[in-house]
Image 1 (cartoon, rainbow, N blue to C red):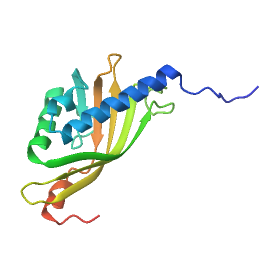
Image 2 (cartoon, one colour):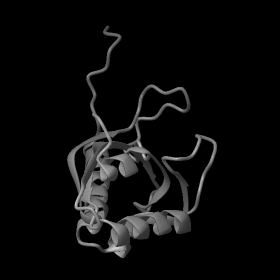
Image 3 (tube, rainbow, N blue to C red):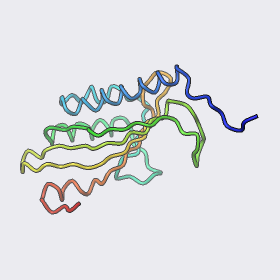
Length: 159
């Protein structure tokens, strides 16, 4: 008798994970096409969002995320998300363990151009999205160095 299990994810869980990945890719493409409704279409009305500037115990609403999305789309040009990698579920956690494909970790690089200076801005990013049974994101947290944006625009940022 073995103490390990050879069972992997079910076909249904794999399909759910792949659907969530495609949902995120579609939403991220809304930045490139300057379509905030496309970006926001994956988020539930009841969304809680932990934004990059906030401490872990601070959450905001869908309206707050919508305002942030509109700010980026209205302020910067050529917004793209690249080098993306996706992980679903978590069998090990400091919180509740789960093998559900409804939790999605996303890693990648955002880049854009500041139209006033012509400066190219880029940073690595991580997001954690939790999808409900309707395929909408009800909980979202993301992390990146927000403070690097002004210094990249001003040409003073050093990698």
